[in-house]
Image (cartoon, rainbow, N blue to C red; front, top):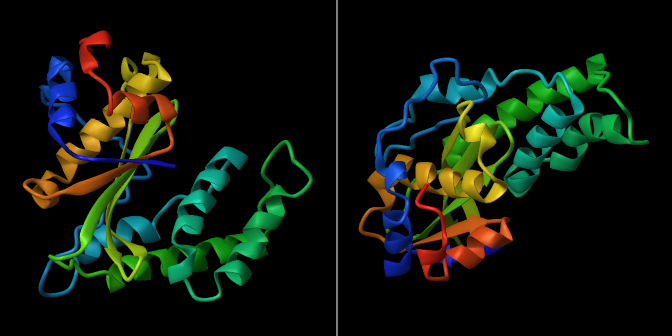
Length: 220
């Protein structure tokens, strides 16, 4: 995983992508949108936590792997994570060609969703903590999480994801990853503007680009 701290090069890179500064329309049919905005005082918004609890049951191996990846990132905050995940991870043994959910796996999936929602309920912003945004993009969607570092551990503060438009799905992998970074930072602007933060990405070309002069890249 690569990281990049915001500086003048980051702003210069975005200036080379003028079309990204235009307002982006989000499809009303966005699915798997996991957004939880934590408030400094008072309880979190229950309607946004509900989005996590109502996360659709995976219908394919790819969807199951994506969900397990999300859970694994925060497994240190979930009691008995390995035990809870076992019914789901067992479904991936032997390189199956299709997903076959059983009752045990469905129950496990429901328990994991509840635990993941409770993780976000426990997080509270610390104004002195280091912030980071971890981003990722697939062929069809983008996702991100804003986190704070407490005692060496990253805790989630807010999730963001949306589907790519038909045009965006034709972008290169680099273009999709860059778009995900831009949209995530725009979404979390209320929290990171004026603050130093870290950007996490597992896309090596993007990590390289953020530390290189942007003149060589397409204006898109």
